[in-house]
Amino acid sequence: MRPYTYAQARTVREAVRAAGPDTAFLAGGTTLVDLMKLEVMSPDRLVDINRLPLDGITLDHEGLHVGALERMSDVAAARAVRQHYPMIAQALELSASAQLRNMASIGGNLLQRTRCSYFRDVTTPCNKREPGSGCSALDGINRSHAVLGTSDACIAAHPSDLAVPLVALSATVHLASARGTRTVPMETFYTLPGATPDVENVLRPDELITGITVPRSPWAAHSLYLKVRDRQSYEFALTSAAVALQLRGRTIVNARIAAGGVGTRPWRLTAVEHALTGRPATSATFEAAAASAADGARPREHNRFKPALLRRTVIRALTELRDKQVSGGRGPGRSDSVQAGGPGSGGPHA
Image (cartoon, rainbow, N blue to C red; front, side, top):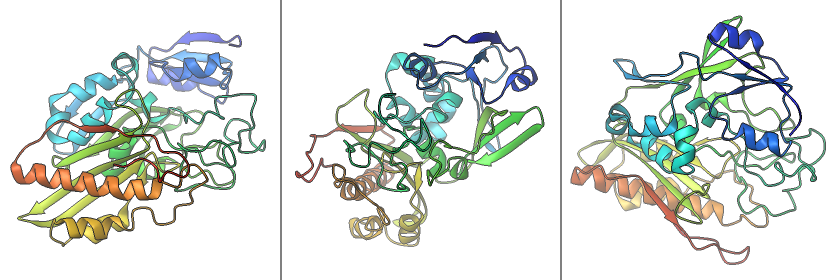
């Protein structure tokens, strides 16, 4: 770890005045400290923001408001979240370990860096870490990498579970700087890699995440997050699906779906949503709608199983959510460990 200076901020204004390209904000530190030890990130200055008044979980007529410094475990346990936004609680509970969830902040979760092993290995080329050096994953071990939104410069998958339901539910993220405040839709907060994979979001160097808002909707309470991964806990998604349905009888009147583990950012599946709307909530409808889930996918040698796995994950999530609504139940979030598949095995099954 390289030398750095340390300061504590007591107000948002004090924090953003200290912000800049060579400064990093420290909250839970569960990602930042690891990357500093590896010298993947080497800020000149750390600004501790844990004393800032950026906590709170409230529900009003506009929706759910969560402060950026709320810890993941507290948000997942909040009654308002579990009752009105179950997919958010489920996504948080299926993230990392209990110890990390007790430390990690909501703002930090949204800004966590990719788990691509080449990004974390400073001896290998990585355009996200060192622009212009190349992408080792293109022809390397790429089983866990993205198949949607990739470019010739980067195929790293986005790591956040939480961001997937936030995109599905049209959440917004609140930002502050010395110039003022602004609000950005989660769906446009993250950027595609293109030729500049080192630019991962629209956050400016002098900005700080202060919180998120998830709007009220008739479908948010009828939602589910399904995560498919190689082992039952402490593992990132091969695929995931955040699904919300509003039913009138057996007819789908509204659907919201986003996918994780397959995109360079959380991936909204609008074509699937449109194919579901106005249709009966049947297995045939789910199969037909999910057929477009992986449209535009560009798999590599070791992750060719992901488009098929994504389609099956979406179908399973829709089926479980429909059955839960019909039965009136609201069970816990689902996560499945799957048998690891080799490049020629057809991959794991949801």
